[in-house]
Length: 462
Image (tube, rainbow, N blue to C red):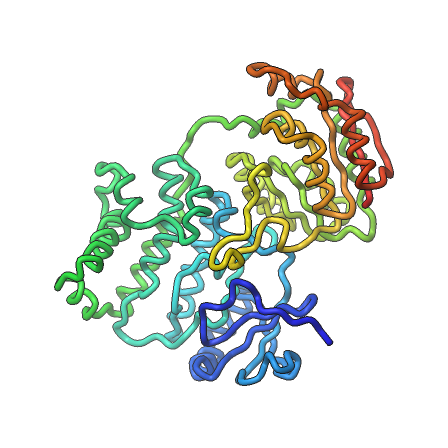
């Protein structure tokens, strides 16, 4: 009997649900969605969306594949299983921007054949490497002449406002987004942006007026009722989406100066020869059984590129430095790497949250990699964040059955940088204790000192 479970985030839409069965992903299409589903699939726009790979592929399968779970479904679709599900609060600015542009491109293409979207949720976008893909196949329905964009406010709160937070105010939206989950509220962004920044039609229509409409709906004013009865010609709808797309395309993060680790690849304490030795060690670690690697503390992706060249299929990278993530995304795109760099504060990973604390899965609950690499990370957690070294090792080893962990001794310049303005209370932070902690949880298969300061790389297997 195949274990079939309903996706924890798939409960809001009565038109269908998503189910996971081992390495298979299925979606039910219930009777109330069947008419719209058939109408959309008969259009040339749908075929073009699939051809462009803007939407996730689908195959109709026998509903019996789901057993009793599939009863009542008109159709059951099978989709490719993505290697890692990410959430908007884990996206850097360019990832969120790419997702917003894809959402608008999908909508504009669909409207050519009188198809529209029922919502504008950022959670309908996922990434394959650095490339966004639309995953909610039941969000499409026939367009009705003159209708307003019902997802306008949701698009603003989940895409536009978080982008404005960074591009106008220089504030990353990740922690705000994670706390609110539905994005940045229109009334809040309207209060934050200075009035002199709102003296444009785009700001007026997508920020100020959205905030006014929200207040009107709260007040239940007659003005809001009138707005609800107005019509929006299709040409104006398309122009609205196109104008919004042009605006977002030009957005860039506000320059807030250098971050602490964005120049790490150039400012680390390694010599060129030591870097070459380290890269060779990482390259030699990769073997045929390793297809997916998590790079914890990926920075701009130097060692991600090494493991990809060594033969892995994909890398999910994690880092807390926004500018490093932006450079990593640029590298993934320009080199066409199967590399998705995501925001992660390793001392405070994304938890299980949302409805019933299960709607959005935690960082380590979504999948398991074949291996991790954790280079120049341990000291940031053990010394920079006061997490006991033994617990740091336990957390890392718990993520994957194999991996490479780097230990950097106290005499290294990078550790001294962390200690320069604080008391050294880290008596257990030494190589012997690190190795002892690792050996209590896994088998050390290979190790090498790769710098004059004594930096050590250690391969382990659980």
